[in-house]
Length: 360
View 1 (cartoon, rainbow, N blue to C red):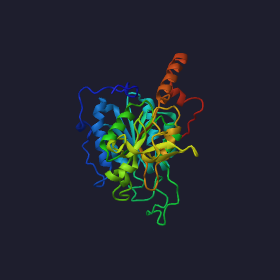
View 2 (cartoon, one colour; view 1 turned 90 degrees about the vertical axis):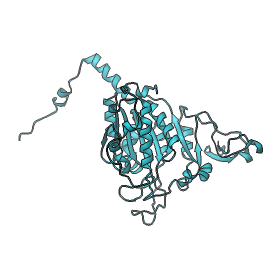
View 3 (tube, helix red, strand yellow; view 1 turned 180 degrees about the horizontal axis):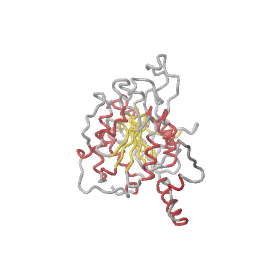
């Protein structure tokens, strides 16, 4: 996979397989947890990159998903609540020979870690952030999270949550993230394709993964996983293709073989809306452009998802644009500083004129 994002990471000396990325640790999540599917997809995908596994690092925070580094036969760090993007940013900026991945959950990333997440995306640090969203706190036994829907009844909200949930995709786009995508844990093919694009992207890439917690929030994404419901609920985005979904309009019935529903811009409000193609025709149906400089359409697409029913939910790459990469810019500044002033002395800086000694 030729890509600028991985150009400095050493290549593996021999061909690797999924087995090479499995650690010797027993995988310990609840039976049926969606985390198993994501782990298998990542372990199966990484050999494609052809990178030395010693130069791949997974950093996690706190939560069920954050056990991830234990199960990867790479370097990794199980850090503290919400701080994974900060720790990973320092690592990625100082070690450009590493492929750095962040594994986090909706509670870890969007509650105590919210500031760290948005600033990593704003800076465009070369990180690949996998945000497992199950819309609940699983590790601490089922409290509502920043993505839980209004009215959610949990142990901490017995009368229903009063808080409007975050839309992680909207949040990432608002933070000027250059790569933003959404996928589903149980769709191995789609998940892998999104991971492949995220790995190739220079700079920050955020992938929201709808992940089922079958113990504390089972069936939260059933509308997207049930084959029949998904026809009407899932909007699969493909760059350069009309945004159509739903049961196909068959040629024998006068259709074009594409979905029966389409996404257009409402001239009255400027928002996006879903239309019935058979009744309203194809005029005005948007063609998805993931590489548009402006995030306007991507943001409008992110708002189509209904927080309660998850109908009309776009999945795929919403935005993929090139922005200046923080690590590259920092390296350039350091090179310029050395050229102008010679090699710096970090020790002298730390023990300079503004330090003092306290007698024991």
